[in-house]
Length: 285
Image (cartoon, rainbow, N blue to C red; front, side):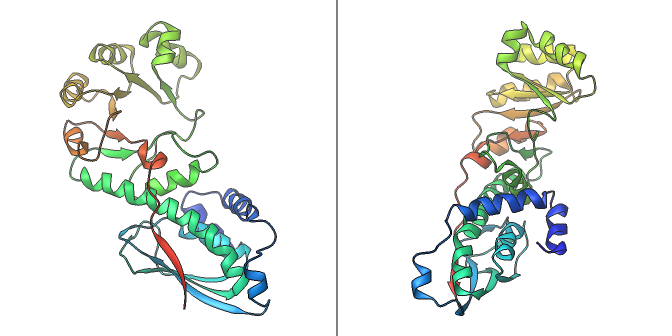
């Protein structure tokens, strides 16, 4: 991988070695021989082509695709940058090189870019829906194993923000924790005792739990499956003493109604677990 590409990945918040490892794993899934292309194309045959958007949306994963091309020694030139809004018919990347290598790179590059662009596009829909409010759309840990870092990167490309990356960097007190500890207060203080400076968010199913969490000293509360009226009441009761995140039962149609209640975040697991792939194709030129 070139130093320039490594630096662009780091700037994007991605570990170049981790991305390369993922790409190598993806390429290995295709095996060592392309039994379709090798009988048709001679080793010296060359081709060029365009990766073109076939719908409007937001692109993400261009540098990841470039890792594919570099590993297979395919020349490339980016025509769009991650986070760009693109339109149907717009060329995102041009490639050139040995025909066999271009075709070997095609599907792996498309699998990554179409998936990440689908997440970015869906995130942008949510971000646009709540534009002008204080709220921001945020992801969850509902990600595909091995792809979390890239999926959360795609959320950022679409205008969203990331929740915790894993179980190690922030605590989230959920209903099972409360049941085991005996109360919201006991669960919260158990974590605070061991990790006094850790960011702790408390999931609350009722307004009474919100009151209890605030009394315990919580500065971040997740409002789980509350109605718009309950959410607005939670905002009133908390009065700025904690950041509030709405979660559960959220839809794009309802997004703005929730956002105008005054919450800080809307948690949307569907950004990563249900986003439709973005349609991109490679056409030889």
